Length: 130
Length: 302
Image (tube, rainbow over all chains, first blue to last red; front, side, top):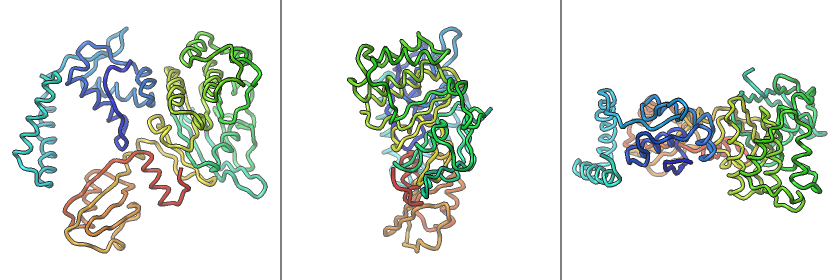
């Protein structure tokens, strides 16, 4: 059983799509800490993706700390962790900068951006994001 | 052994007709290799040569390091082969058919066979001639998975199957990739069927191999680029060779970058089009990449 939602879209590598879908499921608490995460084989079979891709997804999520390996169980969802300073910097500087560049380029105002952030932040809250 | 299948200048002629020309193909161990091409491109001929159903006119092919012409029972016990045009003993019930296959393989795994029968809901008591094409293909698949071969060769396994049966078929195959030693060669004329599955892609057209590349590498290096310019410019003079299919409409330029690298490509775009006000970079699906090749090199479209 696959316990997160994914709808494949063409153009983006499958690997990135699955990683993103899992992250989204974790922040929206569709996947909760301690939940069993599908095995490589289950993921490949259910999503009909290459087992090597499924393997890479699991390895990546373990490396990023979203999943942990439990002997005898397989991988489970980790407790939501507090961002490290490096992660914080990456998101608050790099990612936000990218967003600002795109917005300025398209003449989107700062207010429109902050409104959209508020709106989306709330949306995630309703779905359970702390 | 890193490559399960290797061909060297494999050529097959039928009289004056060259079906496959100087094919150099390698299928690495553990990969799912999608062998793509329009109907009549030479896929089946290649596969039949690999399986020693036909002999090469020139060149050679090895499977598990053994020349295809010397493949014997020992090698065939490690290969599962399902083909679109497979002949099956139509008078047998599915149960009789599976029992008949079982006798040929010492590694036949009864427990696994039953799991597959359940997964596919195979009607064991029905005769092959009385079941649907999809059911027949699934019976053929079970018969070639149950002895746990290390190499699976599927020749157009999905043609004529409805999408639901196709998905079941794929799930069934992936069910058995637990073991890391599986290698799959799957031929298809429809890239959509194998897009999510393949980690290697080979494209053949009119007997010639056009691409052999890792799907990921291919997807990483192809981007659809859309530029908006401040003033119109003459498109013809400025295009590097690896920018495919340029199109200019008013102040918008479209092309496909076949060697995309984040910063480097954007710098290059800015150098060539200093008066460019907007750069849009879009990822491409394998299908879109294929269509690009088809247009660029006039491959008959899949």
